Length: 215
Image 1 (cartoon, rainbow, N blue to C red):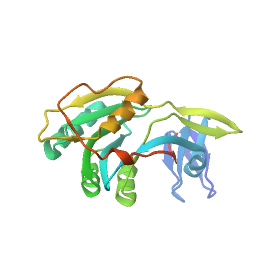
Image 2 (cartoon, rainbow, N blue to C red; image 1 turned 90 degrees about the horizontal axis):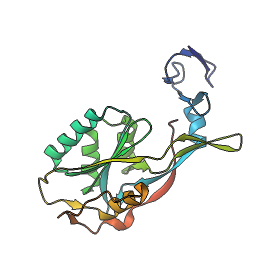
Image 3 (cartoon, rainbow, N blue to C red; image 1 turned 30 degrees about the vertical axis):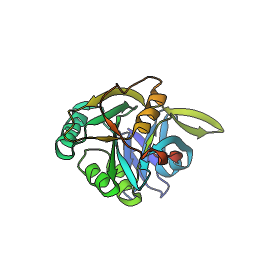
Image 4 (cartoon, rainbow, N blue to C red; image 1 turned 45 degrees about the vertical axis):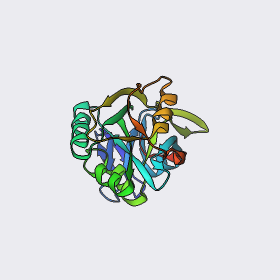
């Protein structure tokens, strides 16, 4: 059993790795690299990563999905449903420390991207960001935390897991530069030669430094 002294003065006893303070609602996470619990406000200040947004030129988006589960059958269920209901046919899966990132590089409107994301079983905060900010960001770098003027690794960079291509329900519009970006990250060609139709919406892909709460 671990004891947490919250900033609001509450004392919390828990055997979980993530807990919310019952008094003030502050989120506390166990950070393995620090061997202690840290509050979300502390991590928000100290943990940063490099990510890529789902912006595309012409106020368009492509689908990014962040899963906090290692149960790949859940992701496969989502992929099958997205293919059946929305005609998405290309899914690039990257493995993270605690789950998976899924990228489907089809050109979509902002509203359609937000709608599709709500039908997945991904992280609720990720869905909320798309609803509020109209875009999402997925990490492409390791996570580091600053502690006593030193950088400590929190999570390694995402790694290529697999590429799933479904028989297209319609002629797909694919953002080639999104695929190229992840080929560079993975240091390997991950997209086979195929008769997919590429668009010209690539020029607004943005790579950013952003804050992340998870340890």
